[in-house]
Figure 1 (tube, rainbow, N blue to C red):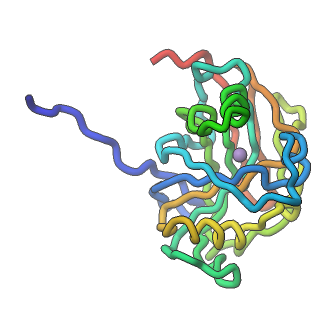
Figure 2: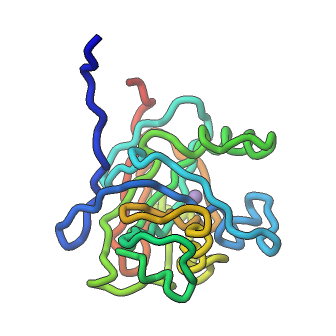
Length: 232
Ligand code: MN
């Protein structure tokens, strides 16, 4: 039997300078803003950062219409700052961690909340709740070389023009340098990795036809529309 399929290469994310950033892996931080940790029933004072992963192919560019995924009746938005890694490293010290950042972007960690919460309750993996096709919309990456680092500033999400999430990047429980340090103790970070850094309070559901916009001060927004049910 002859194999007659090919596997796509790394998805390409757009960079503000016109270059293309090949996406290797996606790491996500859970419960990284105090008020969101509380709304999800956690005690943010007691927990070190924890991580989950998504396939690189879940990245879609801003402007995409995302099909409403199967298996959920509670598909949630999570507005997030996304860190694009440009330099490999393991056991990276927080003091030099930002040297590994290529750039920053706005993004969304779309979530089948019903499946995630059942998994959490039963002590099962989060994969089917989090690692969802088209679930990682990503805005244009702004290189550090052009705009420096982003440690504070407003992060906001609207649905159909109504503000649903509003926070400040400075309110992260674990800032970007700490996230990179923790994560690099578990994995050798590689160029092309993306880190979705967690969401502020105010997460909630969307339905087909909804327009979501994520804004972060100094970055280009991510805008997506929720389409009809995923059928193919
Ligand atoms: Mn998230």
